[in-house]
Amino acid sequence: MLPYLILVLLPIAASYFIGWRFKAKAKQYAESFLQNGLTGAQIAERMLHDHGIYDVKVLSVEGQLTDHYNPANKTVNLSQVVYHSNSVLAAAVAAHECGHAVQHAKAYSWLMLRSKVVPVVSITSQFIPFVLMGGVLMINIFPQLLLLGIVIFALSTLFSIITLPVEFDASKRALAWLNTKGYVVGREANEAKTALNWAASTYVMNAIASIGTLMYYVLLFTGRRD
Image (cartoon, rainbow, N blue to C red):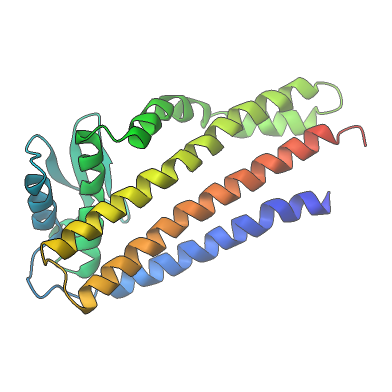
């Protein structure tokens, strides 16, 4: 049992560490301001228009780190600190989310695939903890329940893996545009790249943690008679 737990706990611990480092970097670059004085909202509008996208709205939403692109209603949703700020972090995050809008406009294959998986994962994520818990408790009398939980959790793991190329590509598009247009220069360009790299690493560790958790339940299921 101990090797199984290590398989799960190490990636999860690493994921928490990466998340902590990202938040620290985000705070640092939120206090580093662009020479051009453009806000996140202005950066977003300019990137969308430069890519010929005029049917996507840029909105301000509540919360921290709540920035996202919604393909369903074509909105780039920026947290208030990103929407109103002229920091390096705001520029990087705004451009990244617009990168998803560009992916959508160009029918980027990985984004299209992720969009198809989202409805299934949204539904299954609500009850997967209960299925897995029940499966572990009843492993000796009804192992099929744990097997069902493993199959459902595998979909969630697949989603986390599919998310990786989507996020890396959005950051690549964002940085290329910011640098080409000269919206970040010198120190700003390096800070924007570092911020997005740390953000991307959180997705990598989440995927690794999900794979480790999936393997734990698989090993638990296959070794139930040992």
